[in-house]
Image (cartoon, rainbow, N blue to C red; front, side, top):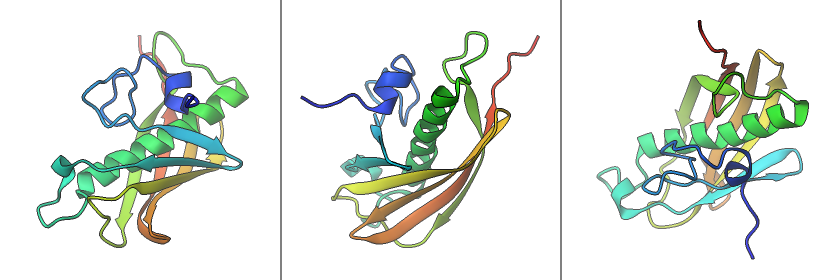
Length: 151
């Protein structure tokens, strides 16, 4: 029996393309807490080709954003920072500084890792990266801001 991912546990009704369990046509990223890090494995689809046989940079950016979301929402849940109003998530991406280091394979599973680097109720920052074969392929610093309903 497979354990539930953070996405399936914390926001099962979310339809986000990258990490929403309720999006049957999305990437359906599944992230797990492992000590101080968050880890996910992802196997690219043939449709994620960048045109020259590697994983598309936009898909990589989506994976980094959505994997950082799991770290943020889990951190917020642990600290009691619940969603406000009728929002499904307590935080939204405010910035994602992606740096591509090496091509990522299109036909092999890649690993995503994340660490929360700072957390306060107004904002949470996460270092997130994608690796394959023990080598860094892409990394990002993600800034998430508290979502507040507007009147």
